[in-house]
Image (tube, rainbow, N blue to C red):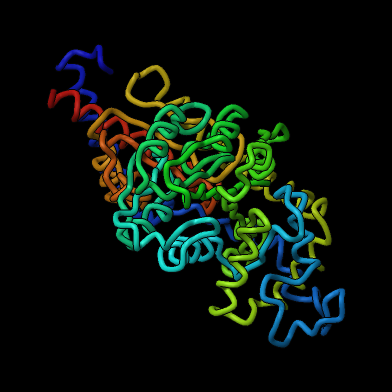
Length: 423
């Protein structure tokens, strides 16, 4: 489209506007704003709600899961995730249904009480800063914004964050206390950190002695195809470097079992987990152990989780295919945008012409398709180039996606035509 004459662009713009009005007349109401599992995915775990316990309430060691106690999770629930995360029993905590809650709490505890090996709580040391590889997860950024933590954008490259920038920044600024990471099938770009990137993380030399890597492994078993990306074990690499206390690991079953009733997981060095247990003991006497027991009985072991995720994969593959095939057929060769082709995770990331993302999202909403707000994938909700739009294919049906992506591509072309004409 960059090579189109002004006359041809105006002609195209008129055609696209006509199509837009036709889409509006359909009266659609499609929500692609968040990466939620679809109802057909949630149905896969319904048996957990029906016959999973059948009155049983005892853990394998005879503990009554109906009662108070067991702060960090029953043993059979912990064992479900040891192989998945590559950790030991002393290095894992099972929380409530939300890993985001565990992350938020970890930041707040660090601010008020400090971290293992740190000289003082973060709050007593002045300004607090976090590195934020971007585009990234909006709820990570929201934690920092809500707590008054300054966010510094680090560019994402094809193999993970720009490590030259990360290494330089953390080595020079003692106020930098953390970095957000989604290392496998990142949100939204679907990038998996390379071995080199993981090793460079493990060998960071931060100026702050209380710096932490927040390693949000949200999509650890969320594959779309048979071939899967591999990710080095960050805790193992940190141990090799003698820096095992530098990383906090998080995951959950939110997109494995139920987002509203899954298990949140925190892992890390024995030192970090011991201190976390001591701090958590003031917050709670124990999380929902009946839910932990349900999960342990339903999945049984890591192989059971993988068998279950193969069913998710069969549901998600046609949805991602619809999105990517439509982008390829409608936008390839026009030079107005690029998009990732992830092999796992929950999103497709689209980058259009600068200064068009907000316009695209507005056009989509006008035609009945709600997207994640433009800019949400950057700190403070401000995309410096106003070009990134996150596509969440998981919740709608394939037929709904077909309609949504037709409107998406028309909106992308219309926003681009308007931008090029303005230039």
